[in-house]
Amino acid sequence: MKNNVRKLISIVTMLTLFNSCDEDAFTENQNESAYKAPSNLTYSEVMNAREYSFIKSGTPIVNTNNLIPTYEIVSGRTADGTVLDASYMDAITIENPIENTAILSPEDYFINEAGDTIKSYTSLDYKNAGIITIADENNFGIGDYYFDIKVTTSRNEATFTNTFKDVFHLNIGPSLVTNLLYSPIAQNLVLGTDNTTSKPYLITGNPDVRFALKTETDKLKIDEQTGIISLLNTYSSTENDTIYPMVEITSNISEETTTFQGDSFLMLVASNTPVTLPKKTNYFFYPTLEAENKTFGYAIDVINAGSVTNGWVQSNPSPLAAEERPEGIANKSIFVNPSAGDWLAHESDMIVNTQDLTQYQLGYSLSTIFYTKNQYVEYMPDGSTPTNLEIYISEDYTGDNANATWTQINEQLSCQINSLTDTPFLGTPYPGDQKIGGGDPDNKKDLSKNADNKWVRCELDLNAYKHVKNFTLKFKVKSNYTGSLKGVGSARPGRYYISDVYFKASEE
Image 1 (cartoon, rainbow, N blue to C red):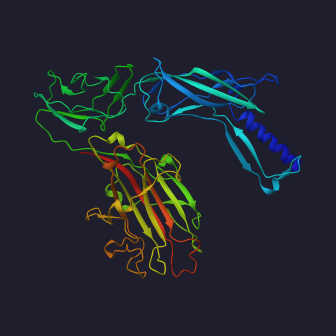
Image 2: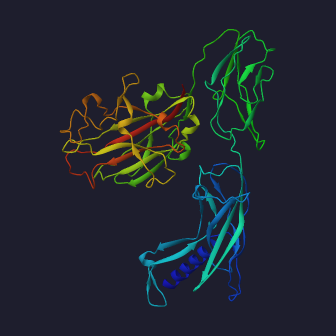
Image 3: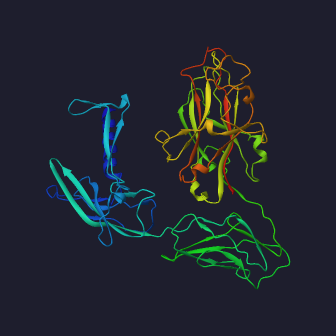
C-alpha cells in the first residue's frame, strides 16, 4: 500500500511540475551540461486594448534549458521612448510559479529513503507564469507601449538570468462609448417649432466621436457633432407619432462604431401641439432568486452551517412587493431555516450580484429596495434576540467575501412594516415579537416597529454611490451565541426571509 501511495505521489508531483503548464511554456534541453541563461522569450502582442481598462497578456514561450523560470518586469516605455513612471507601472503585475502544499491523510503517510515519515508533499504550478496583468482604471491611454522582461532560472548554486528588451508590445485604442444618455428618455418634438432633443451625455468612452442616425431619416436629423436631434422641415403628421431612433456613434480615432436604440434609450413623440410625457424608471437589476446561482442574482457563502442543514431555500415571494414588482418577473423569496433540536449557531451570507452604478451617474436617482421577514424568533432569557439579519454593502468585493471591505447599513435603511404607504422610519426593526420576551439589553426594541412575521420593505438611497463600479449588497444571517441553544429557556433562532431585491434608476 505504501509503495503504491509513494508511486502515486511521485506521479502527481511530476504531472504538476511538467504538465500544469502549456506544452510550449518553455523548451526543454536534454543536455545536462548546457545550462545557461534563458533565451527566446516570446509574447503575443496585445492589440487594440481599451484605454484605462483591464488588460491581460497570454502565456509567454521561453527556452529555459528545462529549468523553472521566474519573471520580472524591469521597465516600460512609450513608442517615443518615454520611460513609464510609477503611476503606470504600479498597475502592472506579472505572475510567477506558485508553490502548492498538499496535506496527506494519515493512512497515506509513507516513509522515505532517509527514514522520515512524509505527511505532505509540495509541487510547483507554473501554468500562468509570465502572464502580465494591468489593473482596471489604470493610466494607459491611446498609444503603443513596450516592456522589458527579466527571466531568471537556477540550478544548484548557479543562477541564470537574461533581460529581454521590448519583448511585450501593448497597443491601446480608444475606449468605445457603451452608455449614451438622452435625458429625459421620453421627449416631445412639436412640428413647426424649433424644438430639439437634449444634448446627450457620453457616460463612458472616449469623447472624440461623431453622431449619425441609422433609422427614421425621413423624419429626423441629427447634429453630427453634438448628437442633438430635431424634426425635418419636410416632415408632417396628422396624429402623434412615437419614434424610437437608432443613433450610431463613430470614434474619430479608430472609426469603430456603436449603436443605441429602444424604449430605455430614447423615445420621441412628434406632435402638432405640446404633450406631457411621463418620466421613466429603469429596473436595471431585478433577479428572480429562483435558485442559488449568479444567473438568478446571488451566491451563498456559509461561514458556519450549524443546524442549517438544507441551506437557503426558495419560498413564495412577498405579497407586499406585488404592487411594485414589474410585469414578467417570476420572483421567489429565500429563507434560512435551522432544523429543530440543539439549534447550533449558524452564520451565512447571501451576496447579491455586483452592480456598476456609474452608468446612471447623470440624470437619474438611484436606489435599491428589498423585502425581509423574520419568523419564529424567540428571545434569550435576558430578552435579547438570538439571531440577527445584518445588511452590508461593499465597494471592493470581487468574489472574496472574507477579504472584502463591508459596511453595515441596517441603520441607514428607510423601512416600512407591512405597508407601502406608511411614513418610512430609519433602521431595520428588532427581530422577534417585541410584545413578549423580557428585557431589552440591546436597547433596540420599539413596540411601534414590531415586525414579527410581517414583511418589511427596506430602501437604500444610492445617489451617494453613483461613482462606484463595484457595488455589492450582502445579507448576513448570524447567531448571537456560540454552541447550542438547547436548554437556554425558550430561545429559538427562527427564520429569515429575503424577497424582491432590486436596483432601480428613476429619471430626475
